[in-house]
Length: 157
Image (tube, rainbow, N blue to C red; front, side, top):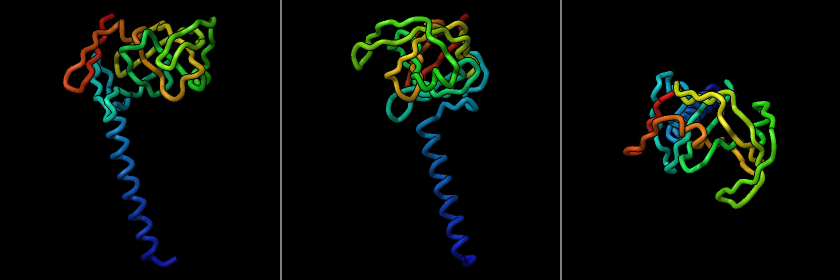
């Protein structure tokens, strides 16, 4: 392969990497490294109108969808397995997709930036795919404010 072709491949790879970084920054602006450790965290709303972030659950990094309309924290079976969570007992839950069975559990800690809650009620929802829904069993312990596309969450405990 000639030196010119290698240079073009390197340029295209650099451009692709740069585009990926920019797209990821726009779609996922609330990374752990950006949120910091302060007792107040400000989340940027994503282009789809939702607040997504990286959080620590029991010390493990997971992607969460902050959902003020959710009663509690809901975790997919895949993420529950990753976190080694066990279920205490089955409960019937009502979701936007209808009624389903979920499994009650407790989280030792949920941390979003420097805003942390311990002993948080959650459910393992086998029908849930992807992110964790971070609902009111966590958010209800905090001061949460929405203003101009930003969600500010402040530790109050």
